[in-house]
Image (cartoon, rainbow, N blue to C red):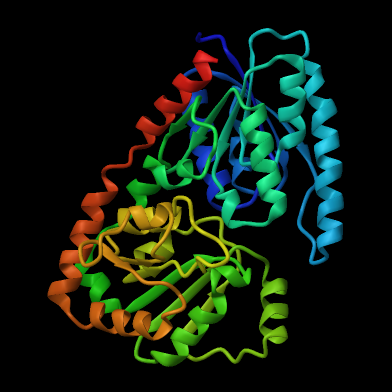
Length: 364
Protein backbone atom coordinates (compact mmCIF):
# COMPACT_ATOMS: atom_id res chain seq x y z
CA UNK A 1 0.00 0.00 0.00
CA UNK A 2 2.22 2.80 -1.22
CA UNK A 3 -0.56 5.34 -0.80
CA UNK A 4 -0.95 4.77 2.95
CA UNK A 5 -1.04 8.19 4.66
CA UNK A 6 0.95 8.31 7.91
CA UNK A 7 -0.17 10.65 10.68
CA UNK A 8 2.46 10.71 13.43
CA UNK A 9 2.00 11.99 16.98
CA UNK A 10 4.92 12.68 19.33
CA UNK A 11 4.45 14.63 22.56
CA UNK A 12 7.74 16.36 23.36
CA UNK A 13 10.16 17.28 20.61
CA UNK A 14 13.63 17.60 22.14
CA UNK A 15 17.05 16.06 21.41
CA UNK A 16 16.62 12.83 23.37
CA UNK A 17 16.59 9.27 21.99
CA UNK A 18 12.95 8.72 20.96
CA UNK A 19 12.58 11.87 18.81
CA UNK A 20 16.01 11.17 17.29
CA UNK A 21 14.82 7.74 16.21
CA UNK A 22 11.51 9.13 14.96
CA UNK A 23 13.35 11.79 12.95
CA UNK A 24 15.37 9.05 11.28
CA UNK A 25 12.30 6.90 10.56
CA UNK A 26 10.27 9.76 9.10
CA UNK A 27 13.16 10.91 6.90
CA UNK A 28 13.46 7.35 5.61
CA UNK A 29 9.72 7.08 4.93
CA UNK A 30 9.63 10.48 3.22
CA UNK A 31 12.57 9.39 1.09
CA UNK A 32 10.44 6.46 -0.08
CA UNK A 33 7.70 8.83 -1.20
CA UNK A 34 5.41 8.34 1.80
CA UNK A 35 2.90 11.02 2.77
CA UNK A 36 3.48 12.07 6.36
CA UNK A 37 1.80 14.50 8.73
CA UNK A 38 3.56 15.19 12.03
CA UNK A 39 1.94 16.57 15.17
CA UNK A 40 4.44 17.51 17.90
CA UNK A 41 5.89 20.39 19.92
CA UNK A 42 8.42 22.94 18.72
CA UNK A 43 12.13 23.20 19.41
CA UNK A 44 13.79 19.80 19.01
CA UNK A 45 15.39 17.45 16.51
CA UNK A 46 12.10 16.92 14.65
CA UNK A 47 12.28 20.54 13.48
CA UNK A 48 14.79 19.27 10.91
CA UNK A 49 11.80 17.87 9.00
CA UNK A 50 10.12 21.26 8.58
CA UNK A 51 11.71 21.99 5.21
CA UNK A 52 11.01 18.56 3.71
CA UNK A 53 8.53 18.94 0.83
CA UNK A 54 6.70 15.68 1.66
CA UNK A 55 5.63 16.54 5.19
CA UNK A 56 2.86 18.57 6.80
CA UNK A 57 3.77 19.81 10.26
CA UNK A 58 1.41 20.83 13.07
CA UNK A 59 3.00 22.28 16.22
CA UNK A 60 2.01 23.31 19.72
CA UNK A 61 4.00 24.81 22.62
CA UNK A 62 4.96 22.26 25.27
CA UNK A 63 7.68 21.91 27.89
CA UNK A 64 8.12 20.33 31.29
CA UNK A 65 7.84 22.25 34.55
CA UNK A 66 9.68 21.83 37.83
CA UNK A 67 6.19 21.54 39.34
CA UNK A 68 4.77 18.05 38.57
CA UNK A 69 1.19 19.34 38.84
CA UNK A 70 1.86 21.98 36.17
CA UNK A 71 3.51 19.39 33.92
CA UNK A 72 0.50 17.07 34.29
CA UNK A 73 -1.89 19.92 33.51
CA UNK A 74 0.04 20.79 30.34
CA UNK A 75 0.14 17.13 29.36
CA UNK A 76 -3.62 16.77 29.83
CA UNK A 77 -4.31 19.87 27.74
CA UNK A 78 -2.17 18.51 24.88
CA UNK A 79 -3.95 15.13 25.04
CA UNK A 80 -7.33 16.84 24.76
CA UNK A 81 -6.06 19.00 21.90
CA UNK A 82 -4.61 16.09 19.92
CA UNK A 83 -7.67 13.91 20.64
CA UNK A 84 -9.97 16.40 18.93
CA UNK A 85 -7.35 17.26 16.29
CA UNK A 86 -7.27 13.60 15.23
CA UNK A 87 -10.92 13.68 14.16
CA UNK A 88 -10.00 15.74 11.10
CA UNK A 89 -9.06 12.34 9.61
CA UNK A 90 -12.46 10.78 10.32
CA UNK A 91 -13.38 10.36 6.65
CA UNK A 92 -9.88 9.47 5.43
CA UNK A 93 -9.75 5.71 4.81
CA UNK A 94 -6.07 5.64 3.87
CA UNK A 95 -4.76 6.88 7.24
CA UNK A 96 -2.65 5.03 9.80
CA UNK A 97 -1.87 6.66 13.16
CA UNK A 98 1.79 6.26 14.16
CA UNK A 99 2.15 6.94 17.91
CA UNK A 100 5.72 7.56 19.10
CA UNK A 101 6.21 6.65 22.80
CA UNK A 102 3.43 5.88 25.29
CA UNK A 103 2.58 9.51 25.96
CA UNK A 104 0.26 10.51 23.05
CA UNK A 105 -2.73 8.55 24.40
CA UNK A 106 -5.27 11.17 23.24
CA UNK A 107 -4.81 10.65 19.49
CA UNK A 108 -4.45 6.88 19.98
CA UNK A 109 -7.88 6.79 21.64
CA UNK A 110 -9.35 8.95 18.89
CA UNK A 111 -7.86 6.65 16.27
CA UNK A 112 -9.38 3.60 17.90
CA UNK A 113 -12.80 5.28 18.15
CA UNK A 114 -12.63 6.10 14.42
CA UNK A 115 -11.52 2.57 13.54
CA UNK A 116 -8.13 3.70 12.23
CA UNK A 117 -5.05 1.47 12.48
CA UNK A 118 -3.00 2.63 15.48
CA UNK A 119 0.69 1.62 15.52
CA UNK A 120 2.66 2.37 18.67
CA UNK A 121 6.46 2.76 18.64
CA UNK A 122 7.15 1.81 22.25
CA UNK A 123 10.46 3.21 23.52
CA UNK A 124 10.01 3.16 27.30
CA UNK A 125 9.85 0.41 29.89
CA UNK A 126 6.65 1.36 31.66
CA UNK A 127 7.10 -1.32 34.30
CA UNK A 128 10.29 0.27 35.58
CA UNK A 129 8.47 3.57 36.02
CA UNK A 130 5.50 4.71 38.11
CA UNK A 131 1.78 4.01 38.02
CA UNK A 132 1.16 6.67 35.40
CA UNK A 133 3.35 4.93 32.81
CA UNK A 134 1.91 1.54 33.72
CA UNK A 135 -1.58 2.93 33.07
CA UNK A 136 -0.43 4.33 29.72
CA UNK A 137 1.04 0.92 28.86
CA UNK A 138 -2.28 -0.77 29.59
CA UNK A 139 -3.93 1.77 27.29
CA UNK A 140 -1.38 1.01 24.57
CA UNK A 141 -1.99 -2.73 24.76
CA UNK A 142 -5.73 -2.10 24.41
CA UNK A 143 -5.64 0.60 21.73
CA UNK A 144 -2.79 -0.52 19.46
CA UNK A 145 -3.27 -2.43 16.24
CA UNK A 146 0.43 -3.24 16.48
CA UNK A 147 3.24 -2.46 18.92
CA UNK A 148 6.85 -1.93 17.86
CA UNK A 149 9.28 -2.74 20.70
CA UNK A 150 12.95 -1.74 20.53
CA UNK A 151 14.40 -4.79 22.34
CA UNK A 152 13.53 -8.32 23.43
CA UNK A 153 13.93 -7.21 27.04
CA UNK A 154 11.22 -4.59 26.60
CA UNK A 155 8.80 -7.01 24.91
CA UNK A 156 9.03 -9.53 27.77
CA UNK A 157 7.17 -7.17 30.11
CA UNK A 158 4.06 -6.91 27.93
CA UNK A 159 1.11 -9.16 28.68
CA UNK A 160 0.00 -8.82 25.08
CA UNK A 161 1.64 -11.27 22.67
CA UNK A 162 -0.22 -10.79 19.37
CA UNK A 163 0.72 -7.86 17.16
CA UNK A 164 3.99 -7.17 18.99
CA UNK A 165 7.23 -7.01 16.99
CA UNK A 166 10.84 -6.11 17.87
CA UNK A 167 12.62 -3.60 15.65
CA UNK A 168 15.89 -2.40 17.20
CA UNK A 169 16.84 1.25 16.93
CA UNK A 170 19.70 2.37 14.73
CA UNK A 171 22.00 5.32 14.29
CA UNK A 172 21.47 7.33 11.11
CA UNK A 173 23.91 6.84 8.25
CA UNK A 174 24.48 10.60 8.13
CA UNK A 175 25.48 10.51 11.81
CA UNK A 176 27.70 7.44 11.41
CA UNK A 177 29.45 8.87 8.36
CA UNK A 178 30.59 11.86 10.43
CA UNK A 179 32.12 9.71 13.16
CA UNK A 180 35.88 9.13 13.00
CA UNK A 181 36.85 5.90 14.76
CA UNK A 182 40.51 6.25 15.73
CA UNK A 183 41.23 3.90 18.67
CA UNK A 184 44.90 4.80 19.19
CA UNK A 185 44.21 8.55 19.30
CA UNK A 186 41.12 7.98 21.43
CA UNK A 187 43.11 5.95 23.97
CA UNK A 188 45.67 8.74 24.25
CA UNK A 189 42.99 11.38 24.88
CA UNK A 190 41.89 9.78 28.21
CA UNK A 191 38.49 11.46 27.99
CA UNK A 192 35.33 10.04 29.58
CA UNK A 193 31.97 11.13 28.13
CA UNK A 194 28.39 10.82 29.32
CA UNK A 195 25.24 12.17 27.66
CA UNK A 196 22.10 12.38 29.78
CA UNK A 197 19.81 14.64 31.76
CA UNK A 198 19.63 16.24 35.18
CA UNK A 199 17.19 13.60 36.41
CA UNK A 200 18.79 11.88 39.37
CA UNK A 201 18.11 8.39 38.00
CA UNK A 202 20.44 9.27 35.11
CA UNK A 203 23.17 9.71 37.78
CA UNK A 204 24.71 13.11 36.94
CA UNK A 205 25.87 13.40 40.57
CA UNK A 206 27.68 10.07 40.35
CA UNK A 207 29.38 11.12 37.11
CA UNK A 208 30.55 14.31 38.80
CA UNK A 209 31.84 12.20 41.70
CA UNK A 210 33.80 9.99 39.30
CA UNK A 211 35.48 13.07 37.83
CA UNK A 212 36.53 14.16 41.32
CA UNK A 213 37.80 10.66 42.12
CA UNK A 214 39.80 10.34 38.87
CA UNK A 215 41.57 13.69 38.36
CA UNK A 216 44.04 12.08 35.92
CA UNK A 217 41.30 11.82 33.26
CA UNK A 218 39.15 14.43 31.52
CA UNK A 219 35.38 14.15 31.97
CA UNK A 220 32.65 15.64 29.79
CA UNK A 221 28.94 15.66 30.65
CA UNK A 222 26.48 16.71 27.94
CA UNK A 223 23.13 17.51 29.54
CA UNK A 224 19.84 17.59 27.64
CA UNK A 225 18.80 20.82 29.35
CA UNK A 226 19.46 24.57 29.42
CA UNK A 227 22.47 26.23 31.01
CA UNK A 228 20.10 28.01 33.39
CA UNK A 229 18.72 24.71 34.69
CA UNK A 230 22.22 23.26 34.95
CA UNK A 231 23.33 26.22 37.06
CA UNK A 232 20.29 25.80 39.29
CA UNK A 233 21.01 22.07 39.66
CA UNK A 234 24.64 22.68 40.64
CA UNK A 235 23.61 25.30 43.19
CA UNK A 236 20.81 23.13 44.59
CA UNK A 237 23.18 20.20 45.16
CA UNK A 238 26.08 22.43 46.29
CA UNK A 239 28.44 21.03 43.68
CA UNK A 240 31.94 22.33 43.09
CA UNK A 241 33.09 21.43 39.59
CA UNK A 242 36.53 19.84 39.50
CA UNK A 243 39.07 21.17 36.98
CA UNK A 244 38.94 17.98 34.89
CA UNK A 245 35.14 18.16 34.35
CA UNK A 246 33.27 20.19 31.75
CA UNK A 247 29.46 20.29 31.67
CA UNK A 248 27.72 21.29 28.46
CA UNK A 249 24.07 22.26 27.96
CA UNK A 250 21.78 20.78 25.30
CA UNK A 251 23.60 20.31 21.97
CA UNK A 252 22.16 20.22 18.47
CA UNK A 253 25.14 18.13 17.34
CA UNK A 254 26.88 15.57 19.57
CA UNK A 255 29.17 14.06 16.90
CA UNK A 256 32.16 16.23 17.92
CA UNK A 257 31.88 14.92 21.49
CA UNK A 258 32.08 11.29 20.37
CA UNK A 259 34.98 12.13 18.06
CA UNK A 260 36.93 13.56 21.03
CA UNK A 261 36.03 10.87 23.60
CA UNK A 262 37.85 7.73 24.75
CA UNK A 263 35.12 5.99 26.72
CA UNK A 264 31.35 6.50 27.10
CA UNK A 265 29.32 5.83 30.24
CA UNK A 266 25.64 5.21 30.83
CA UNK A 267 24.99 5.35 34.58
CA UNK A 268 21.20 4.98 34.61
CA UNK A 269 20.09 3.65 38.00
CA UNK A 270 18.39 0.31 37.30
CA UNK A 271 16.51 0.59 40.61
CA UNK A 272 14.66 3.62 39.26
CA UNK A 273 14.69 3.23 35.46
CA UNK A 274 15.80 0.54 33.02
CA UNK A 275 17.08 1.50 29.57
CA UNK A 276 15.05 -0.31 26.94
CA UNK A 277 17.67 0.18 24.24
CA UNK A 278 20.52 2.62 24.90
CA UNK A 279 20.99 4.82 21.84
CA UNK A 280 24.01 6.64 23.28
CA UNK A 281 25.78 3.31 23.75
CA UNK A 282 25.18 2.42 20.09
CA UNK A 283 26.31 5.89 18.99
CA UNK A 284 29.47 5.44 21.06
CA UNK A 285 30.22 2.01 19.61
CA UNK A 286 29.62 3.39 16.12
CA UNK A 287 32.49 5.77 16.90
CA UNK A 288 34.66 2.82 17.96
CA UNK A 289 34.40 3.65 21.66
CA UNK A 290 34.08 1.13 24.51
CA UNK A 291 31.15 1.64 26.89
CA UNK A 292 30.21 1.00 30.51
CA UNK A 293 26.47 0.39 30.96
CA UNK A 294 24.02 -1.00 33.58
CA UNK A 295 23.54 -4.74 34.03
CA UNK A 296 19.84 -4.82 33.08
CA UNK A 297 17.68 -3.73 30.17
CA UNK A 298 17.92 -3.58 26.42
CA UNK A 299 21.14 -1.62 26.79
CA UNK A 300 22.69 -4.57 28.65
CA UNK A 301 21.85 -6.84 25.67
CA UNK A 302 24.28 -4.74 23.63
CA UNK A 303 27.38 -5.33 25.77
CA UNK A 304 29.46 -8.43 26.47
CA UNK A 305 31.79 -7.91 29.43
CA UNK A 306 35.39 -7.64 28.31
CA UNK A 307 34.52 -7.68 24.60
CA UNK A 308 33.01 -4.31 23.67
CA UNK A 309 32.66 -2.80 27.15
CA UNK A 310 31.51 -3.66 30.65
CA UNK A 311 28.23 -3.96 32.56
CA UNK A 312 28.42 -2.40 36.02
CA UNK A 313 25.60 -0.80 38.02
CA UNK A 314 25.93 2.74 39.33
CA UNK A 315 25.60 1.42 42.90
CA UNK A 316 29.11 0.01 42.41
CA UNK A 317 30.73 3.36 41.71
CA UNK A 318 34.14 2.28 43.02
CA UNK A 319 34.10 -0.67 40.63
CA UNK A 320 33.23 1.68 37.74
CA UNK A 321 36.13 3.94 38.71
CA UNK A 322 38.54 0.99 38.77
CA UNK A 323 37.20 -0.20 35.41
CA UNK A 324 37.79 3.25 33.89
CA UNK A 325 41.37 3.22 35.18
CA UNK A 326 41.96 -0.25 33.73
CA UNK A 327 40.50 0.56 30.31
CA UNK A 328 42.38 3.84 29.95
CA UNK A 329 45.68 2.40 31.23
CA UNK A 330 45.91 -0.80 29.17
CA UNK A 331 46.32 0.04 25.48
CA UNK A 332 46.08 -3.59 24.31
CA UNK A 333 42.77 -4.06 26.16
CA UNK A 334 41.49 -0.71 24.92
CA UNK A 335 42.24 -1.49 21.27
CA UNK A 336 40.45 -4.83 21.53
CA UNK A 337 37.39 -3.28 23.17
CA UNK A 338 37.28 -0.46 20.62
CA UNK A 339 37.54 -2.73 17.60
CA UNK A 340 34.84 -5.06 18.95
CA UNK A 341 32.57 -2.10 19.74
CA UNK A 342 32.84 -0.82 16.17
CA UNK A 343 32.23 -4.29 14.73
CA UNK A 344 29.15 -4.76 16.93
CA UNK A 345 27.64 -1.43 15.82
CA UNK A 346 27.58 -2.68 12.21
CA UNK A 347 24.72 -5.04 13.12
CA UNK A 348 22.37 -2.07 13.35
CA UNK A 349 21.25 -0.52 10.08
CA UNK A 350 19.12 2.56 9.49
CA UNK A 351 17.77 1.07 6.25
CA UNK A 352 16.81 -2.17 7.97
CA UNK A 353 14.95 -0.31 10.74
CA UNK A 354 13.07 1.96 8.32
CA UNK A 355 12.11 -0.95 6.06
CA UNK A 356 10.76 -2.91 9.02
CA UNK A 357 8.63 -0.01 10.25
CA UNK A 358 7.42 0.76 6.72
CA UNK A 359 6.24 -2.83 6.36
CA UNK A 360 4.34 -2.65 9.66
CA UNK A 361 2.64 0.64 8.74
CA UNK A 362 1.75 -0.62 5.26
CA UNK A 363 0.06 -3.80 6.41
CA UNK A 364 -2.29 -2.06 8.81
